[in-house]
Image (cartoon, rainbow, N blue to C red; front, side):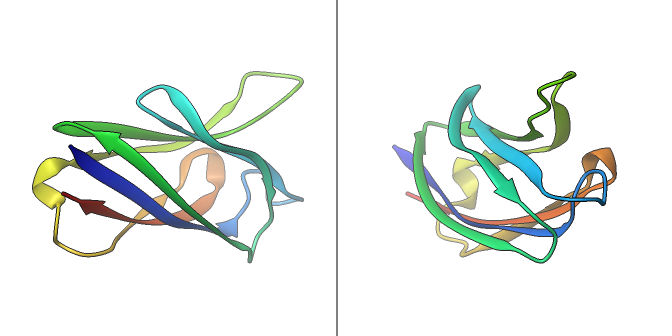
Length: 106
């Protein structure tokens, strides 16, 4: 089994630019982190370890109680990334700017 380790989430800009976002992360459609208040300039260490077989989908969302949740971004991990070290992905949906650092292990 292959393992995704999400090390951290960095917020450079929140989705509306005025105050913290309520961020949550889904892996393969299941919530694995959050809802957590995240503000610009903050880094959240998470060390979430998630098992998958060949390919896995990570979705980052901003929770909105009064309307539909805002999609910050999606990225895919693949078994072929195992052993290649830490990677970073930039997600900029809904005028936000987040960076997730992760690693794929075999």
